[in-house]
Image (cartoon, rainbow, N blue to C red; front, top):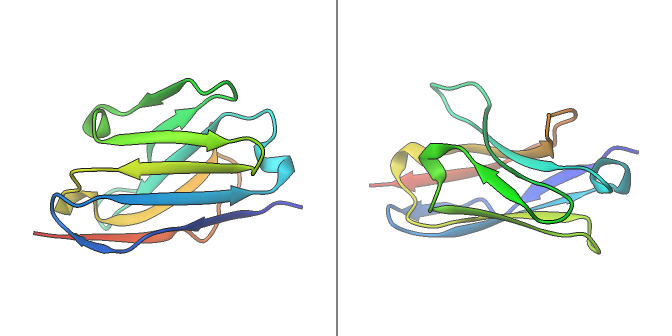
Length: 113
C-alpha cells in the first residue's frame, strides 16, 4: 500500500514560519531517501531538498539556510521546517522519495507580503 499524506500548510505573512509533515506508508519510507518538492503557478514541481535514512540532508540553493528537513523513522514521517518565508515560496508542497515516485495530495502554503 502506497500512502503519502502531507499536512501543515497555511497562509502566513512574509517572514513567518511553518512546519510541514508527511506521513508515509512503510513501503514508501523505510530505507529510502525522502524529498520535499514544491509546485507553483510558474514552476512545475521542483526539488527542494532531501534527507537520507541516516539524517544527512541536502537542499536547493534558494532554500538553504531557511528550510530544514528532518525525519522520524519510528513514525515514518518526514518534516519540512520553513523559516523566513517569502511570497515566492507560495505553492503546493509535496513529499516523495528521492528520486520521486508516488505523490500525495500536497499541502498549500501561501505567503503574503
